Image (tube, rainbow, N blue to C red; front, side):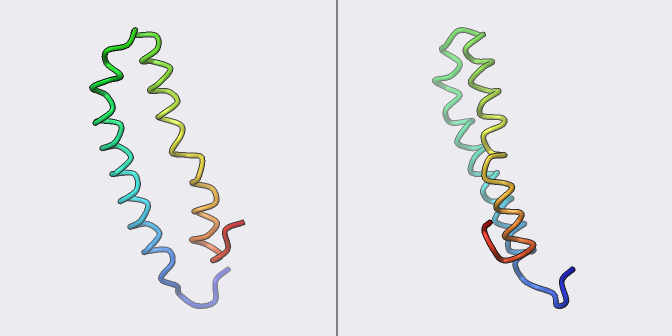
Length: 70
């Protein structure tokens, strides 16, 4: 448990919201090319893109809580 308040959590939440917004805008921008592919390939692409943002999330949340990346 933390003894003193830290700015890492509010800064981390703002960074997370900004990052997810940019990621979503990037996927929306890429959708103009994704929509030209076969529907099964679209499904796979959107499934991968829908899960890919989770990969760095664990380390980021650890940093927000502890100040260390691992």
